[in-house]
Image (cartoon, helix red, strand yellow):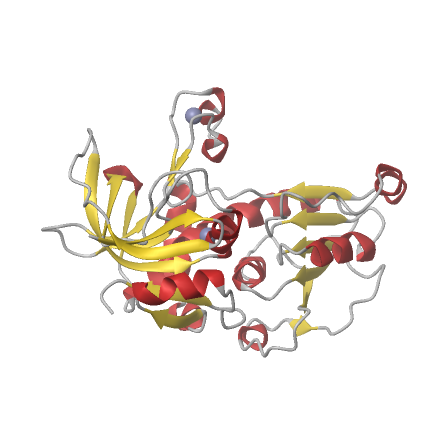
Length: 325
Ligand SMILES: [Zn+2]
Ligand SMILES: [Zn+2]
């Protein structure tokens, strides 16, 4: 079968690889239809991997002789370790992640546990690539909402840094949460138009001021974004690191300053579970029109190597690989 294989630092190519045939108990071989091109894929490609790997973890697929489309939860946890016992499956000591440390979706077929596939019905099945990232945002938002109990106000002034897909999804979930009553501003370093901002009724700011926001969610994954968040947040405020910081970056604030300003730093790492996948499907089904505008360019697999090595998605959208294009 045809697949995109990462074989070195920033090296990826389309190749013929052997089609998976062997399945273990509970596994299936699914036909890949669409895959979302995530910044994580770009970062993994740029770092290079210990061995050749097929990336792609935001996967929509079909099963032979079955109707409908399925979204993949790419996290396979063992169900046995102490983390799994506490339902912290993303922290499983034996975690396998399809498209990260196991082969994923940038191929015609994918081998996966049957129970990792979540059926969904949407008018546009390509929207299914948003289910996995939205599922992670559902977890992130619940951690943010839990942390807001530490704030001294019930309507926190909130700043989202980064208008990429993570920023949109967190903004969407906060504005749609019955447990959040804050006012949201969005700061994105680029001047790129972000049409979804108006539709969520949030304000875009060009130069956010210090000491305004009680809660800042860093969604850009950039060192500047993190430094800005920690510089701007109010005393006794909360910074949530949601965008994945690069491994070589250290926290741009001293423990002394963190202490004196009484800043709470929280993080949210991935976290697709049956529950969050189900919640994500329900959100998209209720509001397909909104999510439709987050789909960016649709490309064939052949264009993926360029897409990953020359990273430039349309701002605030997901580029989608259409395996049948
Ligand atoms: Zn992703
Ligand atoms: Zn486990």
